[in-house]
Image (cartoon, rainbow, N blue to C red; front, side, top):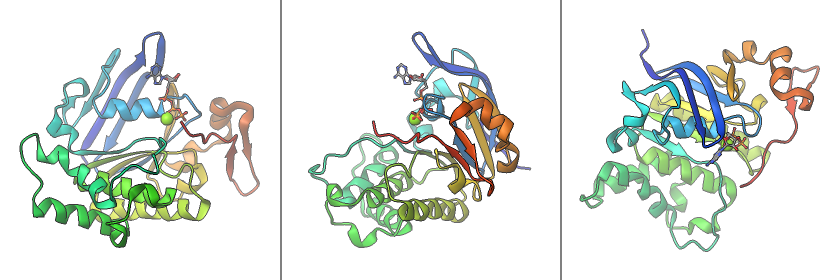
Length: 260
Ligand SMILES: Nc1ncnc2c1ncn2[C@@H]1O[C@H](COP(=O)(O)OP(=O)(O)OP(=O)(O)O)[C@@H](O)[C@H]1O
Ligand SMILES: [Mg+2]
């Protein structure tokens, strides 16, 4: 039997005057690969922040590793790797690829331990995993968007997490690179047996790879195998007139990608 690692039970999260997620009930099993979809403002990033223990539920509960989310400690958080939604990276930010990945070790290091050769080995291993080992001494700001995404994934991996949260990892990169990043994530899921929550607007791209899709718009509209969730009637409720479904079953929604 598989173990539940994340459990939302009628959980509600929000900000002053805004309910971002309402009455969410959802169990995620250890080792599952879950895609999270929904329009802009549907609560996807909030879901990530809740799992990281950064938000207090306004109602219901969220358990992560058998711990209430609002009680997560640093050692719990160190078990969750996080790739935040893309911000703009200053091209002149003076840091090398390896230094950026080493940052992933700080959670595991704690406050007083200095990085050792072993931490460096783990960081290099993470770079290997994403195919960026040859760039370890390059300036992070000089890399392409897709290469930077790989480095950020490596930084999350250097934490040696059990759970990986990826918030729109393919946004803002070209289509070929998007496919290679999705392939990479799928391989990490298989090889490292990680539990993965992948937030994306690229429904067709992740459809063949995920175990389940979660469809959000403040409320949870559906959670299940992709073919069950990607039903026109259900999608229409969430995306409204922005939705187009082609004869080949491709789901196309208005362009929801944007940079913050
Ligand atoms: N820091 C905040 N303060 C106040 N309201 C917020 C904050 N962050 C998000 N919200 C609101 O919560 C709701 C959900 O936002 P969230 O960022 O989770 O959406 P999202 O699904 O990630 O959207 P996108 O696809 O644009 O990234 C929105 O109404 C948003 O305006
Ligand atoms: Mg978001």
